[in-house]
Structure formats: C-alpha cells, structure tokens
Length: 240
Image (cartoon, rainbow, N blue to C red; front, side, top):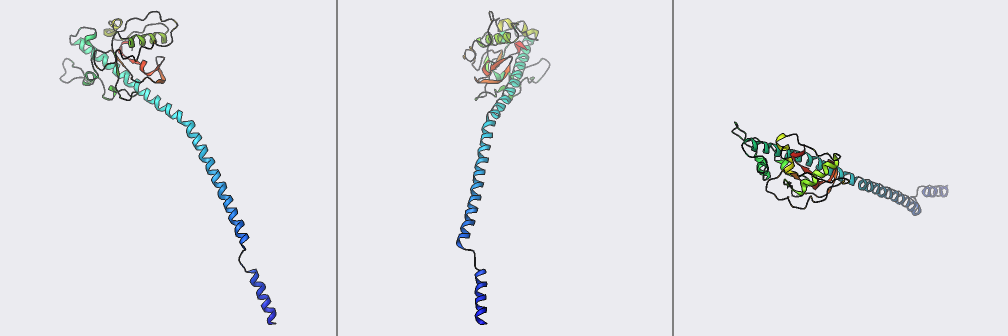
C-alpha cells in the first residue's frame, strides 16, 4: 500500500515539473521573429516617410519662393508709387520736370515729402517696403532714367503687350517718359530681354532713379508682365 502511494506521488511529481529547455528555446525564437517583423515594418515606414518628405521638399521650397516674390512685387509697387508721389511733390514745389525732380536715394522716399500747408512731411513709403525681400542684403537696385535696364524693361513690356508701348496714367510723368525711358525699336521676334539688366551700369545706391529692381538674379516662379527673372523686374511709375 505504501509502495503504491509513493509511485503515485512520483507520477504526480512528473506531471508538475517545469517546461523543458527546448520549450523555452522555441518561445524565445518566436519572440525574436516577431521583433524582427516589427523592425522591418518600422524601417519600411521610415523609408516611405523619407520618400514623401523628399517629394514634398521641392514644392515647399517653391511655395516659399512664391510667397517672397509676391511680397517683392507688392513692395516694389509701393516704391513705384512713392517715386511718383515724390516726383509730383517736387514739381509742385517748383522743381523743373525731369531727372532733377527724382529721388536720389531710398532714404528720401522713407523720409516723406513736404506738402504746402502741412507742418509735417507726408509719409509715402513704409520702412519695410524700402527693402528687397528677394536679395540676401535686402537692398533694392536703383534703376536710373535712360539706363539699359529701363530699355530692357520697356522691350519686355512691349513684347508682353504685343508691340504696344505702355503709358503711365500720371500726366506729369507721361510727359517725360520718353526722355527717361527711350523708345525701343526693332523688337520683332524677341521674347526675352537682351540681358543688360544686372550689369551694374545703373545699380549704384545713389543718384536720380526712376525705379527699382531686385538684386536677385534667380529664375522666378511667378512672372511680372511676362518676365521670369527677378533682376529684370523693374518697378517704376512710368508704366502703371
């Protein structure tokens, strides 16, 4: 009887023993395989995200440039209007029409103009508009009357308007526009400017100027009167 109980106890003891080493090995291998699958999936996901980022990067850069170009055009038009107001004030105050009634530096536009009957100068240009958002230095390039840059711009405008020279709506400036921006002849077949813009011939920081252009020579995302180069955009009151 005692022998039977001992054998039964041994049998029960065998049933209650812990899993063998081979079982542990299989479980560890299974967990290792699962971890490997997760790692592969993570790498694949990261690769896809990198590809999407690479694909989106040019679009983001282009959108950023587009926004800066829109701001440049907005500011350039403000400068053109400030030049018109400055010229009109000088002529009204007795200056003869022509180059001598033009501003000679950006500070004159930022300071404003004297108007008869006013004790304070009339502000005609915002401080931020006096800076070019497309160039690294932030300075507009001054475009002088009679300059190659102005001639190029007139040529581009005439190509854009199908060989019709545009006029300004300001009678005072329209009277001297031919002198400040000589007529361009023989433009048939031309679709781009001759390339003298950016030559530096009229890009100094002082002296009578009738417009401004960007110091950036990059290709543009936007076009301004059909012109797709930053340094060929001329913001002037002569043709508005």
